Image 1 (spheres, rainbow over the protein chains, first blue to last red):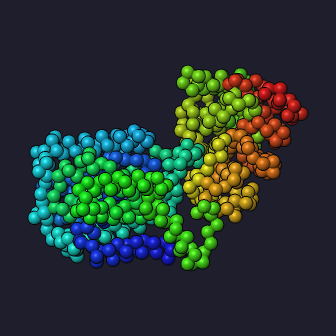
Image 2: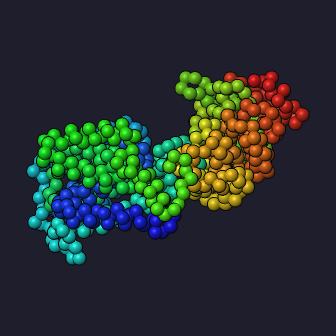
Image 3: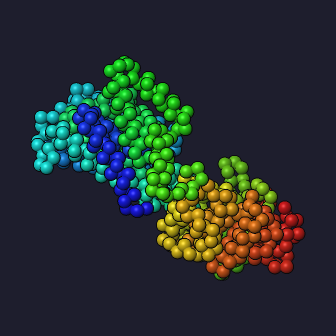
Amino acid sequence: MSLVRWWSGLVLAFALLAVLRIYLPLPFAIEVIIFSIYTLGCSFLLGRVGFISFGQPAYLAIGAYATAFYLFYFGNNPYIGILIGIAAGIVGSLLVGPLLVRLRGDYFALVNLALAVIIYYLMQKVLADITHGDNGLWYLTNMSSTPVLDLTRPDQFFIFAFIVAFAIWVFFKYLDDSIYGACCLAVKVNEDKLRFLGYDNFKVRLTAFVIANTTTALAGALYAVYLGFVSPEITSPARAADPVVVTILGGAGTLYGPIVGAIVYTGMKDVVSKVIGNWELIVGFTLVFIMLAGEKGIWGSLEPRLNRLMDRMTGKRSDEVGQ
Amino acid sequence: MSGNGSTLGNLLEVSGLNVAYGESKVLFDVGITVKPGQVVACVGRNGAGKSTLLKTIAGFIKPSSGTVTANGTNLVGLTAYVVAGMGIKYIPQDKKVFSDLTVQENLELGSYASKDYGWDKVYDYFPKLKTLLDRKAGYLSGGERQMLMVGRAILGHPKLLLVDEPTEGLAPSIVSHLKEVFGELKKKTALVIVEQNLPMICAIADKIYAVSEGHIMAEITDRDQIKPEVCEKYL
């Protein structure tokens, strides 16, 4: 694959996202970027490794609360807060991962959901002295201005989140194209065969689990800095299906599915909710339609058509049957 | 039980092997030996326990008792990926490749695990694979899939290949090609092949174990006796 082709998709996708910013309100653009990062971890787990997780709010909360604890109790630099959120994501994933990645299918989904419920009640009740329970931690005015990009200013926070998102997408694109990405797909399709080739499937799954959930924790840390406030609502079991819904909307396992899914989902939430009270109903009907149309999601259905169009424009012939 | 010959010079030695799936016992006190460069065949009816024997050697199934020794190391209790790392590669019967990956990516998986990127030897055996590198493995024919599976397994110069029903459902021309390939491969690696195609396996095997209902019924080592009509008696 040529270097130009490797970069062209990423640059185009993020250029479109930057253009969208001109026409869309800043809070919407920031929400889309953070939600995309949040969903990317779920999409990687579901589409690449075959893990469906209803427990992503747990890892979002780990990142958000780690950042919030630092900004509320210990310091005021948002950059350090975000780094602490990432570190907490790695530690949290490594603590529960060795147990959870041994599970399969429904069990993995439900145990993760249970983890989200546990963290919700920990933050709401058990650790209420530290977390302030439902009132949450407020530290917006505690945060200090930062050099280069001042994360306390929403317009500059958007630029920072945009750069972080671009770097994450470069990383995941690299993963997709690497031998490790192939291992992840192989473990999803037939893990026994991968073992026969000499791979330790446990390590493959654990690494994927840590990468995906650290990405989710990073999204939590970004939320924590952007909002200047964190409450147990962030890990509410009622919102446990959100990242899975957005993943399926966009297209599980696709690189740009989370961005498309986040734009559509956030758009529905913000736009449709102004017209129809029960906007989730529209999301539900859309999901049913997508599943009936082939389970590939919006981007998953568009991508092959766009690839064919690109090939036609560049004069390249695809020799793959059905591609 | 049979097959407990001299331990000297054996690449693989299986002894007193008992395997059960829950309450259902599948292998009874099985013993086989394989010397370097030998092609050893296991023949028998469906459900005789041949595939279970290979899976147990490969580390996929833990036996209830018995030993599996390769070059002096007991393999019992080792996981499949560790056994594969020791140069004992298993090629399953189902011909399922990683269908979402291209042929090239499938070979890269084999190369990365074995740290062997010498694909020329794969192309020497299966020149067709070179023309299919960009093809998704899910779109390959049964014969091409088998070529890919064997090609992927020979990366890393394995000491022993465990091949389960390699010719099942394949066209005669592909079977003939595989026979030639296994005949060439035995110069570099030992093979244990589970096979029902008696003319094919008798043409390349140095030793045949007849398996029936989980027992080794016969061990045929006399070259003159390795004939389809002799093996048929045990099926």
